[in-house]
Amino acid sequence: MNSIQKHLSPWVIAAAALLWAISPAWAQTPKAPLGTASAFAILGGTNVTCTGGSVVVGDIGVAPGSAVPFTNTGCIISGATPPATDAAAVQARVDFLSAYAAFQLQSASCVATPGNLSGLVLVPGVYCLDAVAKAGTLTLAGPSDGVWIFLVDGALTATNFTVVMADGGNPCNVYWVPTAAATLTTSAFKGNILAGNPIDGSITLTGGTLAGSALANVAVTMTGTSIIGCEALSGPFCCHCKKHHKQDKEHSSCNQGVGNGSEGCDPGRSNHGDPAHSNDELGGTPGNPGRKGGRK
Image (cartoon, rainbow, N blue to C red):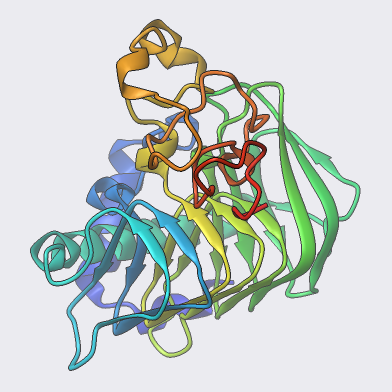
């Protein structure tokens, strides 16, 4: 599990070790440890490609950039994109890689867990997984401040895989840390994916949904996927977050008429906690209640 550390620069390892030494409790802290990277729904090291009508709610960044850092072919994006995010993405990449290195330091004390995760109910903690393809349904049962860390020895792959948050758990407190690439296909995935390997640390999302962030040291490719980043999930108008219920009364910012645009919230909870199923978010068609023509 620690083999990938040799590919990280010494200053990143040192920064991660310092973070771990002075903050032994950050595994129980909701905001830790992504730093400025938490502001991005998608962050790539070389390029980001969005095709197939994908929907992204949140910012997209590429750092340090390339000749063609960002390609958008038919995607709906609610958030900033390159080059507007270039400056912020540089520091975000530093913070992301520091977090990635810090997670690797926990591999010696994690709980060994079956690779495919099907049918398991897991409480907050640090888990070590092999590269067996994920399938079925995984339930994460814990409070809103619970933190789950999954250290994957190899590639993170999943097909028709569903992650369910139970007992108030927050998908933004879930971290998936593979030592190789991440490939998700038609999955209802939750959590932050940190693909920090400098050689094959890419993320490929095909179909399905992601509630969380996709952070890659190399490239991110999305095809027909709906992604909602943590800034949107925990923002001031996140109507399914308990800590923001006091702001739900601001209905002037939550007009739920179909097709009037994305507000990032759903006061009527018609989406049952899943923004991809809202009556208004992510591409509903005007005049067609029930999201006819929108992303199901």
